[in-house]
Length: 209
Image (cartoon, rainbow, N blue to C red):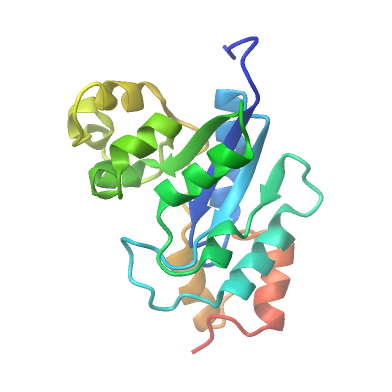
């Protein structure tokens, strides 16, 4: 049941979006419904801190694909904050900036369950957790034991608080890695990405060998 009489709630979904796909869109929608969010802000990173930047499409292409993906959906917004900042994109820097820009708004940072075990590696993680709620959407392939509070390698009270905000949405097994492979092999990516993203990738020959 949704909580009543709360301040406006802004969801933030960050990532490389290389490319954005229907799994991202469904995750955003599921999180919005599960946590009664006012809107979801898609935040493409400049350079990911914990992933290799190999095969990373240029920032302007990833941003344009997100524009195409969310076009016409007033629940979703797009920010180039991390792209403009440049360098490695640290979530703590983004959340501090969003806190200053949106006083009185509750921030909900959306992650996939595969990121739970890596939270302790995030820069200034406890300062970050003081600025937002981490909401976790279960994803295909994540083992049940990885979703337990004792698998979250942080000091109390964070594991229990983060565990309480795990939700199971629509388990859509789509990955950017697979989409890049299919595009490189000349295979269709229809029904895996929004139609506008499919068109953009074709028009700009992205991810070709």
